[in-house]
Length: 155
Image (cartoon, rainbow, N blue to C red; front, side, top):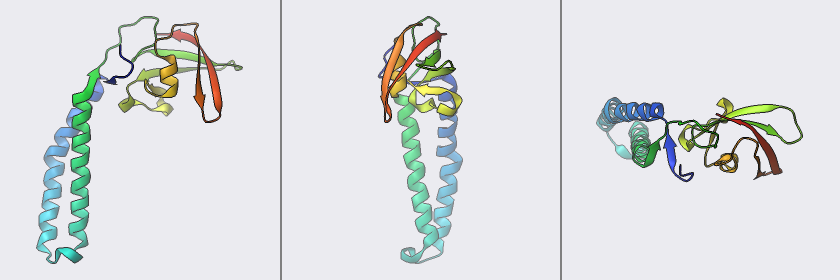
């Protein structure tokens, strides 16, 4: 598995495809309708509704392009199991000097959510873990200095 690649789950792909369909359909029509109404109000130079609608249209088109890029450039991953950390792995780690264990799932950058325990394969921590096995020690730099962890389990 290539650590530098962009990965998404099948669920994320479906969610992005649904979002794209909504953005290109109802959302786009809604903004076009708002633009038409704002134009009918006259003087476009002083028309706040028109300027807001144009700004919303720009944001919408930017999001459409971003979602399309993600879908085109990402690889779908499925977990095969094994004892080597890769995208899709659940990793139990213990910070050096503590007894507390934490579990993280390695995901692509689009699905990273530290609060949910999902870390990106491209984050400093994800990069340090990637390709390592159970029992390995890893370290990476943080703004507060180097942090060391031991990999307790990989599933």
